[in-house]
Amino acid sequence: MAFIKLIEHSSRRGVATHPYPEKPFEVDELYRGKPVLDASACIGCGACANACPAETIKVETDYGKGVRRWTIYYGRCIFCARCQEVCPVNAIELSREFELAAKNREDLTVVAEFKLGSCAKCKGYLDVSIRHVELAQKLLERSEIANIMQELARYMVMCLKCKRSFFVEKLGEATRG
Ligand code: SF4
Ligand code: SF4
Image 1 (cartoon, helix red, strand yellow):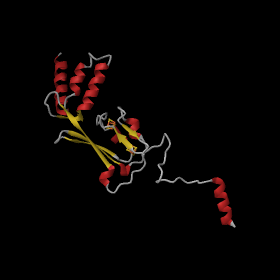
Image 2 (tube, protein in one colour):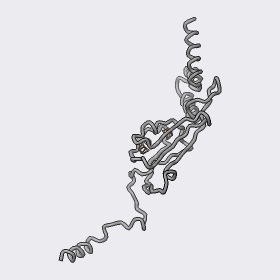
Image 3 (cartoon, protein in one colour):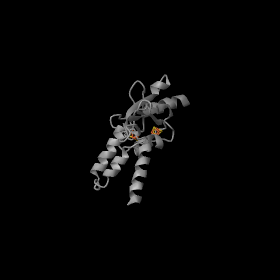
Image 4 (cartoon, helix red, strand yellow):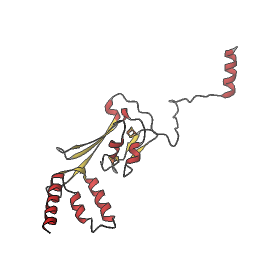
């Protein structure tokens, strides 16, 4: 009897399940799915990697090749959207894609590389990408105190070693009067 009641109930209510994967499953507008990088906008700053609680994103500097390497491994992602929140140039966004099954680790990994900037003094590699330097310079140019910032702009495109000697030089000038 219980079985007949169940059939009656089902015929009244209709089909409650979705025929996925035969038919695509539409998720909500605000659904948090696979984070997607816009490599043409990314400056390789590493803010997303620092904010990622699951160590899904890594940003490493390869001074041998002169590149900043950005890597995401989706197998670790918890879809928290911290990367999207902290990105200063909106280069990473959570999509609504949720089908992330893959046969191997490589298929769940995305890598992007960005050329490193070079030191204005010694021409060695900086620890930031060219794009990062260019963006900082643009922001300085737009700044209301652009003239005062000219010296700072020179300092900004120096490697750590040259920055140190620049400071010592300036300190020497200041103390000599
Ligand atoms: S959504 Fe969260 S866990 Fe996934 S990459 Fe972004 S910060 Fe990391
Ligand atoms: S925070 Fe944005 S710009 Fe910086 S590395 Fe991540 S995706 Fe690229």
